Image 1 (spheres, helix red, strand yellow):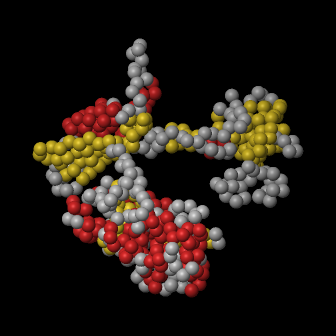
Image 2: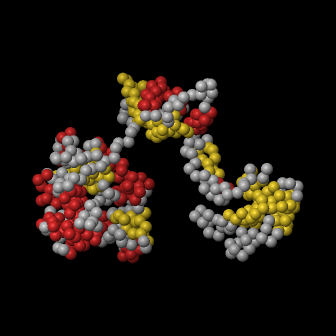
Image 3: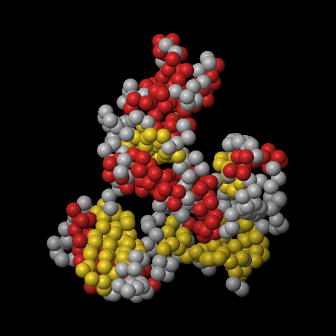
Length: 514
């Protein structure tokens, strides 16, 4: 936590076109961008259809407003180019940018949906002063394709207002805060629309006008509002009269082993054991095990190459990790040699210290996990699969094949009644010679053999899954049928007469009981 003592310096970075900048970067890699004369908007779903979330400069010049319905804008501008906004992707990008910004200071945090905050107290001199630091920030953000407005102030609120409403590029000292924020509109306090309208009706349209009004008169109107919505409290925080600490999340722990070589080499295999032992020692101290590994070699020509390995279960056995990584290095290009190697645990999971069996017996579960790791590393993740349960009432969907290292199935099957040991995939259609009304077939032919029904149980009705099946899919009535010869079948009727979803119902054998 940054406590913002006396002399604190806060940088606010606002990315006004974050959504559009990210969209341009993605589209530039996949296809050609629309022309500069074409208005582009990014839309999100609103109450009455898609609404404008972000827009290009051409759309702004044509008067398109955020929150306007897309159909209304298209009626005015037929050449409007509409794309779907990805708000969650923008938020993740902003989180990554906030973490990356710790190159300048240890405390950074995301600020809303289009900004970050940095507490640079005591760090500006490392970059030649605040002016050079801001220039360095702006240059690096521009290199990443992000347009940014920056401002420095003694408090978080003042920095936010100056970056978002003051045009950016402002360096505000402690004695200049009131003068710097006075001409800004009251919206800069980031208060609700109702509070903004109330202040404007009172003639308080700027921060300066709000500061001139006697505090007692306004307190009567806003004393019951929450602190984060009260304009007087927010103003006091911006002016430094109240504390406003910056709560920055901690850096994620990285588990990495490095080896620096005195001269370039070509073969990384001899150095794997030392890297694995070092990494496993770090993980053991934290009682963790690696689930995903990345080996990276840094070549002398400035390029780097990496290989990833996934594990079936958390492990910190150095010999096992070496065997997995050694099998992935055949196609790696060392160039003219490399002088730095790193082995990083990208994903680590709790793995408590354990004692082997006193009788010397091996843990079968660990052996299976090690076998899956070695097979997957050699054959590829799509070649080594196992069964996984899925939430579905439809029998053929209950079980599916997934890569063995994709993780444990998180969903269990829905089994309401007894199911046969053997399921036919796909279900085989049968010819019904005589059917009991609203019951199973009294006589049916399957695989050229005619069967007579001795007894049955059912029906068990399974309706279509409307979120997955196509419109018109028919329901199923399942029966457990025992034939005269003792064989037991699991039969279902697809559809019922008069359901409006096809002709006569069809019968199928889905499975065979033991």
